[in-house]
Image (tube, rainbow, N blue to C red; front, side, top):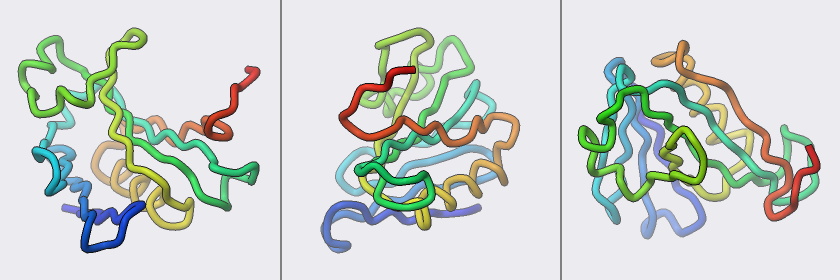
Length: 139
């Protein structure tokens, strides 16, 4: 099991969260919201999406990051009701993005990559570079 503590945006005593990777699945533990966990077998795919807060290369600067979890079973919402606040139906297929906040490419993103590569390599689709936060992409 790999637990990745996340302390993002606020002083450590005010905001402690953890993403927990295990052979069975991924879980989110946050004292401000209901914890949840999902089995790898019930996911179709995962990615890390990141948008730069400045116009810098992917390896430097601060990034707004999120984990995107794509359901792999028809009754995902019924199996995981605690994940309902994450549910996004903006486009098909439905996705469950977990926004992590501001981080750097040298800390949180590599640790997430390690967790996905270790426990769910067949599901992990890599890091999606969303460009600069707040700007419109032309591609």
